[in-house]
Length: 297
Image 1 (cartoon, rainbow, N blue to C red):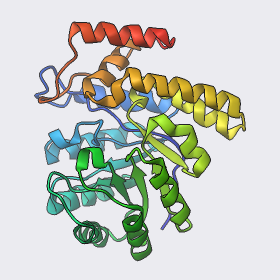
Image 2 (image 1 turned 120 degrees about the horizontal axis):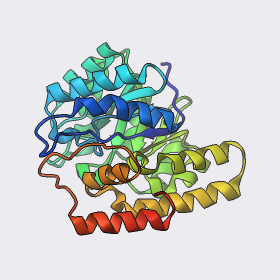
Image 3 (image 1 turned 60 degrees about the vertical axis):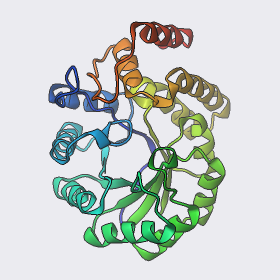
Image 4 (image 1 turned 90 degrees about the vertical axis):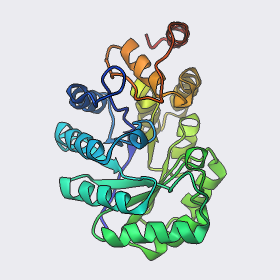
């Protein structure tokens, strides 16, 4: 199945109106355009960073359609379609295929604990429901509780042609490298951890999905561009800067920190949806000081 991504894919925030009652659609298109202009090769809406789990099915569909329209084929849009249960995940994945998304990324089902057999059956059902549409597994056990192991990844990739890759946000670079080593030709192991972006690329990951990119996409793009030119010294310098920025941004532990950082850099990315919370004034001052210390504001 035809599927190819490389470079930095931005895990987009979702702009909400104050108090989080509605999606602020006036900002979704401009945010899409901004990230593409800054160098994103792809976009990943409604995922962890995008507060997708706090959105209704209709909202997720509408945001995806707006992102695809605004991207205007200048970047590949990978829709995050994972939910707590199978039927809605299939509904969102079919919708993504129908409206022109490049692929779907699907987080492991969460809250309840599932063994490997259950996870295999879950992803198998989705793959069979959209046989002509590319599907990416999404491993983030810190949030989802359940682990998409290298062994399960290989099994699913071998059994289903349209399971074309995995976004690995486990924080386990050894597992990432194992997946890359086990991958069949054309299977994309995409790094989802900013702290080892350069190392992921050097290990063979063709792309990275990044929430931090909402605030400092230019830094991550600089890592990628330096590596393409073979300038390891510059890539290492930019990776250190990226890792420092990720710590200042608290690895996106609060969605509001990415939105405030974006605001400080000149783009209003809206508000968060409860139970997410906005930053306090003290937290905003601390963030501004941190970003000033690395020269991005």
